[in-house]
Length: 93
Image 1 (cartoon, rainbow, N blue to C red):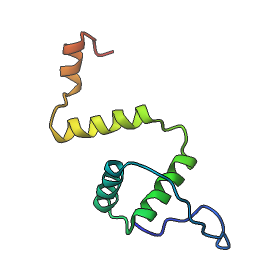
Image 2: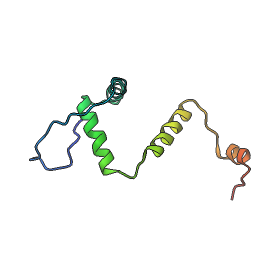
Image 3: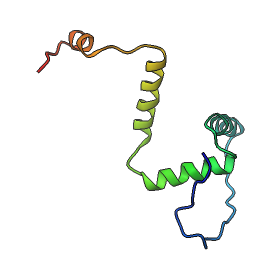
């Protein structure tokens, strides 16, 4: 998964940025980057920040809904269109 670019040209200087977060959140970050094939924590954080800047319309609520849908699919807690129509009282139009 590496080969993520900074979005700038090759002459961009790399700078170090320090920030604070809880140890439990750092643990979650580490579980995430390692589980998704990134080479390092820094690479994952750069990728995530770049994605947030390039696609700012994707908000937290949409991400939560997407993650819930993925979990529902994994747990086979989904229904087909006919079952949804019956459950919610809509008709196929």
